[in-house]
Amino acid sequence: MSSAFEKTIFEDPTLNVIHLLNSISNENPEAISLASGRPDDEQCDPSLIDKGLASYTRYVADTEQSVATLLCQYGKTAGIINEIIAEHLQRDEGIKILNPESIVVCMGFQEAATLTLLSIFEGGGILLVPDPVFSGITGIAKLLKIKIVPVPMNTFLDPSALRKVAEDLEARGENIKALYAISDFSNPTGDSLSYEDRKALLALANEKNFFILEDNAYSYFRYEGDKIPSMKSIDSRRVFLLGSFSKSIFPGLRMGYLVAPEGAGVMSFSSRLCKAKSLITVNTPALCQAVVGGLLIKNNYSLKALNQPRVLSYTKKRNCMIDCLEREFPLKADSRKNVTWNHPAGGFFINVQLPFSFEYFEMCECAKHFKVIVFPTSLFSLTNEAVTQVRLSFSNATESEIKQAIGRLRAYIEFRMQ
Ligand SMILES: Cc1ncc(COP(=O)(O)O)c(C=O)c1O
Image (cartoon, rainbow, N blue to C red; front, side, top):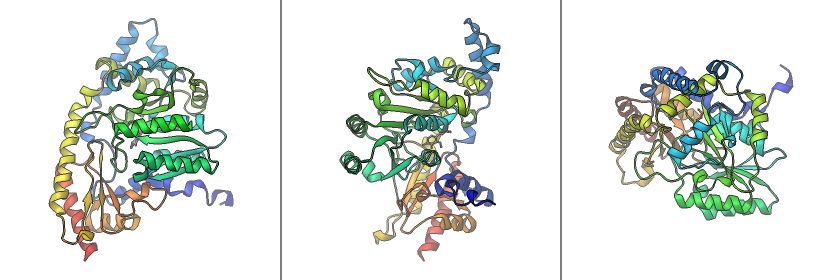
């Protein structure tokens, strides 16, 4: 093969995370998997497709528009359900959209992130990310040759430490263009930003003149405590909201959206976002938009009721996993041998801290010999962060599988500690 195809960005480990998640399960079909962050298969309801389509078709029939043209023709680049999404964001998130043109309906978070990065990073600049971080953002940023500065999660969650990072970069002449943050229940660590953290991030973004890319993929899945307002709802001027319906409806739709910054004197990004989109996906499939639009109309623009049974089910699974961890890993007299974990108030993941390094080799060893697949948190890191951490996903395992899986993980850890 030509040398032009050797040693390329496609060899970068960040681009390999999704592949690894799929391949480890395929190679160990008899192992129980707590690796992938897929929504619960039990909660994927194909009847939503017909219900959504029927509701949207009825809605269009009451207007001057033609259902045939809307659903079967090439469509508007920015989308056909922007007003419906605007109403939905007002209802569920308290986000007041000034102009539906600020919304671009996208093929999932992944396209929303791609378009946003393309629209901001022309001419260079830095993307700040917490570390470890969801590889969907770092993978696409790497493909687009954007310079990424990873900030260890503890520093990221400490406003004064984060400010110091920004000031150090500034002093070195670096130009921070954007910061990526998952406000609620991050992937992979389950961390959330407090209300004060959100205000501090917005203040820093205003002061240092950068954008915040706010990912709200898990916001519906809160199992305790009160909802914390999104940064977009607090101050829209600096925030690109990158939304996804993958968890709140289902991922097969590949539906998401972005909302560009809005407010007095704020530059409009609509034109550049739409130009980029018109050359990447032309428009988001009208059929998928119709399903989402119809479901939103049918549910009074809110996804809360639709997700209520899911929230109850995930709460049980999370509690079951925590009970199992407590049972299998009681505290030891020698604290260096302890297995510990966090207690996220929502989302799909629990992050476990082991007394030894757990990386790719250990994942394969544990899957092959102990028949449980758990994912090294370090595979989401751009540095050497989190080498002793493991991401456990409870979203797509039954309670019985969770019990067996945590028992098998204990057996592996005992084997390693001998
Ligand atoms: C942090 C985060 N953001 C967004 C998404 C959803 O992405 P998409 O809408 O492309 O399915 C996921 C899914 O795994 C995620 O973990």
